[in-house]
View 1: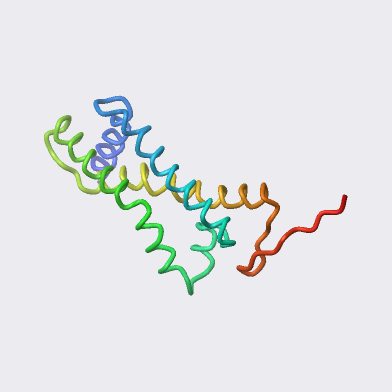
View 2: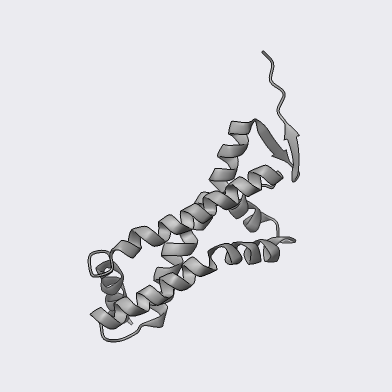
Length: 142
């Protein structure tokens, strides 16, 4: 088991300096753009931040997961395909769990970390807050 963990860690770290390193920047950037677009849409529709709502609202969790998956499915599949190509070139073997870990790290994590803060920032910039899922305008006293 120890050898498996060491090999996994060495292979994961090796991706950041080996061939096809451009994908380490490209795929999270694509996921970030999709998250930015989703966050803008959430702010415009008065929806609460995505990741926090997914964690706390069990009634809507399945729909939120489907919506998020639809948004990043292509980036995730691209991450899987490119990692399989990388593994075949470098290691002459395919390790499916490493491929899934890299795809999640490059596509899913940036999406989850960026969409909610974008919603909050845009809403604050526009002067709107969300209370109980409904949009309410802030009143400012000048």
